[in-house]
Image 1 (cartoon, rainbow, N blue to C red):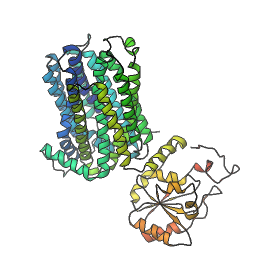
Image 2: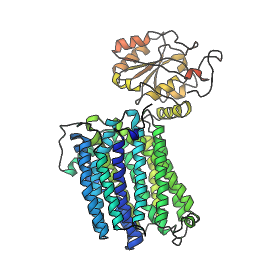
Image 3: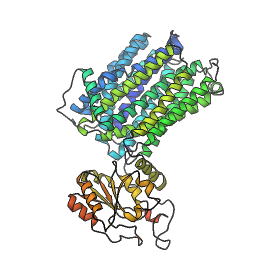
Length: 581
């Protein structure tokens, strides 16, 4: 039994680096937010809070391209070590800013933390496919995303503590410097992976390099769409988290403890959603959950807006029991939880798809381009909210706008989905209902695109299983009598199927031509479902196609479905049940 990823050196140190870095970023940001809102009473504080949420992402617009080039040009682990060493000095500057209570210095430090994060982002997500198998990517991304929001939660708690009665500059300084050093020490243990593309030219013109990377991302429709999906998630997140302290303070009458409680709900829910997203997409790239999650985000945002719009501002209270006893407080927490769970389901498959589809020699630059795009979305989202607030827009009005954007995004994502929705749904149902396990899937890619996948035939569900094995749409060879069945015809609309009739050789020629053109062919050499529990007569059609097309054959053995009610075996041959493993 393999050890959990978190205690393996190929993942554990990277996880710690990301966790500590995210903690310090949000520790500083939330200490600044709480100081502005609750300690200094700065005029226009609400818009400053929104700006603080967006300013951390500003460097991503200009430096993600440079970060991607450095990560592809040099060993990603070595670059991470140098960045985390510089981060220690920036943490020292943040400590000085907090001692002097200088908002301008703290804002500057926040930008510098953003610089480090922008350069580290392509390393963090670019190195994951080097350290993990493709089937482990969704789980690795779920752990990273979940840990990021837990770090946000803990950073918020720490920020609230620092600005409270028991905090102070010395406590802030010790915590900030300790975490910065811990992040650097963890970076020293990240495994070396070598340079992915040592000949990469590092363009010092950061604007030009970022524009070029965005252009390269745009040229690949599949990567562009997944990049926009990732960017939408972070835009939704930054807007929701920027609004949270404001409506807790101004509408619900809460203080630091109430904000921390809401962020606890938000962060835990993101972690739950990330785990669910990893489970849904385990074993293959599945994107159908993304538009569904966007729909849920939109509905939760609209419901939260409706809830808050019906409330009158409540007097401030330090008591959490009194706070959650007020009308709307618990309802708002449930809406935030639903929004965050959907967000976790949204992001994990999206980023796993982008990492999996990015070329190995350009993976870090692809991640850098996505980070640039994400930063543009986040800054645009936070900036729009800040402008709307300065113009007098209420929190419910902004939430309505957020909900409408999420609903529109759901429609767009479903229309341009880079994967087959039927294949995605089938894969999810097989995992949920039949607990399907796939062994040896790594043997399919080396066979190339023009390969023949040959399966034994044990049940009427075999074709459904075959669809779930591949990341691209295959061509099906299907018996002509089965193709005429009324219950099969609806499914044929979602697949490319060629009915085979032994009396008509034209269909075989069509299959040979398809394989020669690089199509993956799925075929059942037996031609019919087994009635004995063993292989039936194997026809030579698959051999003919392979010979004429010069294609390799990948044999696949199905086991378990012969025990379902969808097989042709009787109760004397096998113990039949609805949902065997």
